[in-house]
Image (cartoon, rainbow, N blue to C red):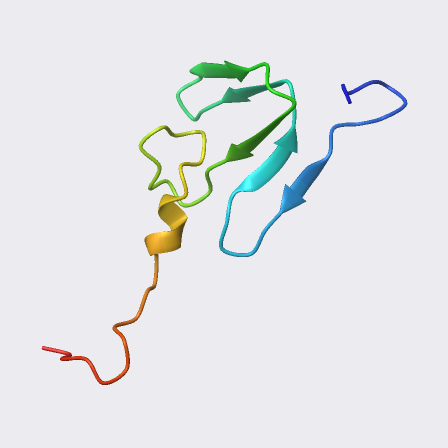
Length: 74
């Protein structure tokens, strides 16, 4: 559902994950570069590991993984 004055943009915050934003959206980075998406919803990267930044590619899933129990820690 598109954003309207009666229905503002919805952003869902996920712990250890991207921001889920109802689209279409326009993202402006710190250098002023504009990236647009016409999709009905997008995942915006917050960890900066994404290869397709500012969009999320699930690279955040690799963050903080611990070795399996009983495994060699060396």
